Image 1 (tube, rainbow, N blue to C red):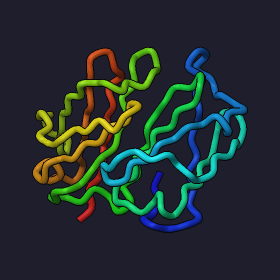
Image 2: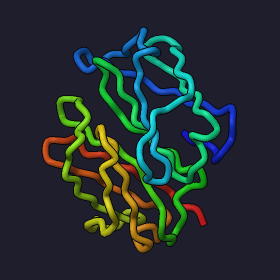
Image 3: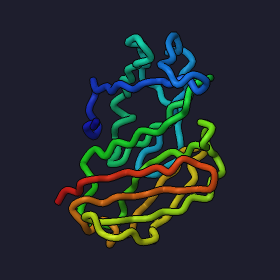
Length: 179
């Protein structure tokens, strides 16, 4: 799924999963709380529109301003739902380039956002061996985090970032780079 940078009229769909039953959660459009971070910056409340599609599926239409970044990270929470984070790289992850960001969320094994995780990062490129991440992890709050990889960590065709923390579900992002 992708968003274009600084373009109005976009949207994406997602599923709310009930933490207690592991099924689609319905009737919650007005209870969704989402936070957006752009290029690793501070969180801001979303101001776009959430719409229920049915069977636990929802749509979000971000504002044009919410899409004005290279890395858009949106943390979605709702009472009784498993929180999650969506990352959109509007121009892709650029190969061998410094100053980029990747957003991710950390959740406990019981399905709660982990706002105080001590995150370890492991990076592999093109299916090679993992190495400890040398970039910077920033805690944005409410279980949302940002990782700024080193330039060398982006020097591959397919770059995988594995984020781990004690008692949390590991999060893996595998991204194809662009020139």
